[in-house]
Image 1 (cartoon, rainbow, N blue to C red):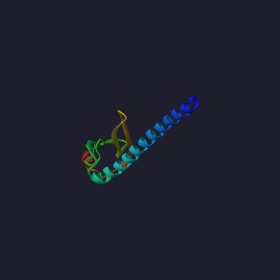
Image 2 (cartoon, helix red, strand yellow):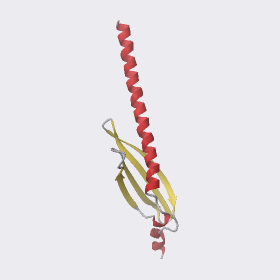
Image 3 (cartoon, one colour):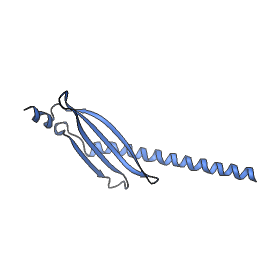
Length: 118
């Protein structure tokens, strides 16, 4: 009986950990889809590029929020090069979790760049 109870409790703990990993993977997969959706719903026009911070919530995905920051990398050495950080956040087991991508966008004809040159 002792051996059986130890075996069953070990299996229960392993099952619990597996379910937690599956839940985490599902949340990250949802977040990656939401990142793609933000790019489609709120595209960044290269002409309008400027330093900017924006955030929002998803109406149909409760508990998920998004944050996007656009920074000029180096005005003097690389005018027109921007760093875009896009993050989707949610609560996972009482802690904040997030999926984030960072990408460079080159927009030499952006109004924020051309207005500084003139």
